[in-house]
Length: 201
Image (cartoon, rainbow, N blue to C red):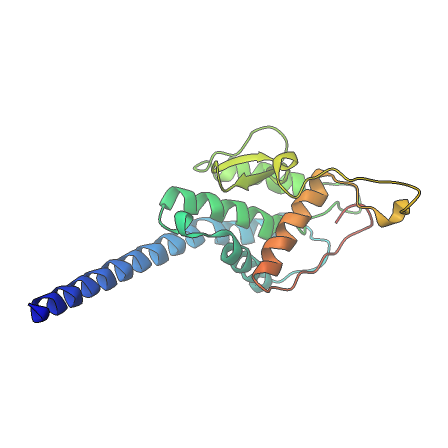
């Protein structure tokens, strides 16, 4: 009887291992497809049409995307192709577009990138109002929501008797997005560099 139980448990373990490997291979294939679909066109667009606040090589942009994905992909996401693509899109938008800024002539490269993204990639539905940078992907509802609904957007209790105004960060959608990505990357033990003029990261 013990031999039969032992044999059954080995069979179960083998089946679990096979299913895990199949899931892992499917996950890798989905990610490979997403990289082909989104990364190369985005890098080409950036090279041809935009200017970042600091020069960034393609490898650094892709590395940033991988670091964001590491923090954003959770178990429920990894097992669902649609959810995985939504997370990939959210991370790709920020990995490729967050360093875009205003040109010397006042041209908004981030707004252009947003318009290009919305016209180029329509499989994942993004809100049509505002730019793609005005929304975050809520992992619970799996919907793009305004940054004001992100946990990083919070009220500040300011008392001028105990604190100076220059010591307070006023919550805005930009500070919420920055805090969101900093928290995500720091949890993965990834370094973060913020660059840009005062008041606009």
